[in-house]
Image (cartoon, rainbow, N blue to C red; front, side, top):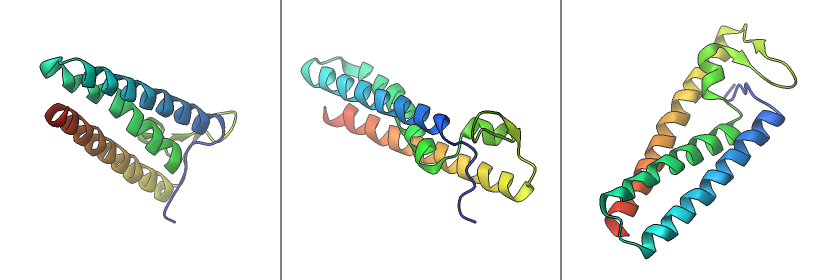
Length: 117
């Protein structure tokens, strides 16, 4: 099984909303930085971009990095303990991939803003 989701419904919606709000903040920050020279402070674009990338990656993979670390899932209205060790291992692997990919996305965006804007 490639994916073992540990969130569903409202949790996915929450992460998508958080991701899109962070995307808007990232774009507004980018527009601000294009209009004003703020020097090294351009690296602050990393903050909204890391929230954006991790939130959207969590939503689309249906895996929460915190829940997978704690070994729980929230598929509906209540929290449950993940009992299957194979699923838990798969969730933790997916959580690591989400964090790694989120860091790569945010670092690339930050580097591009710092050097090209």
